[in-house]
Length: 77
Image 1 (tube, rainbow, N blue to C red):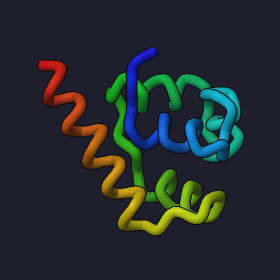
Image 2: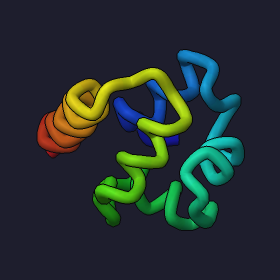
Image 3: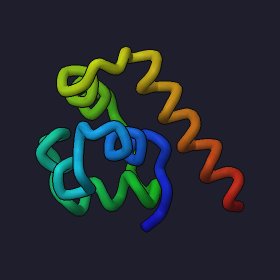
Image 4: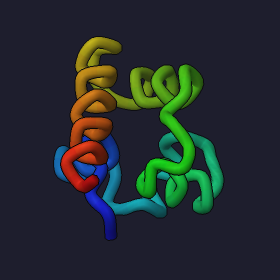
């Protein structure tokens, strides 16, 4: 499974046990989680608000993790 800083952070901090739980947390399909993880679809404002509502992460923390995920992508190239 590809690493994604934001999704992995949510799993590591027990807001979700895996990608299946992220589907419920973000109210999206499994394919959307897969596309986010593979960076074919960006994390959009609706996803950010869903994460904010379900966790104690601030919008700035969420955006920071999105930026970190973006840098991971650049490091893979």
